[in-house]
Length: 169
Image (cartoon, rainbow, N blue to C red):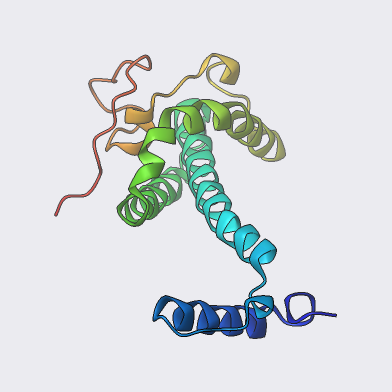
């Protein structure tokens, strides 16, 4: 069993040390470099970043949908706080991984159905009847990632897909 299967931490530290030595011009035993798993791990970093983006977008859409459709009043502030935290998380993620910006519209579109199903399930668990049909709700990237909340005026067009960073530096 290789270090990769036995202990990923030991494997990553060893491979990183070998790669640093090689980058510095030092000769290393080529057989010690686990190229297949190095490539897989590099690709997994990108998948992980996309997964974080999808998760945060899904959570925002779910909570925006509940804010728009739920008759409940007590949990609204908590839903807004969750949206604000997820927007801040996405802003930090986009600063660290700017290339994810080009995937925002697609991510919002892909997560809409999942998020609406979660919102519907949550309302059903709480015996709430939505005030509006959840299947009719649509949000743009601008609505999901910008400062907008349901009930604020004016409501940006859901067809708008422009995204301006939520960063206020």
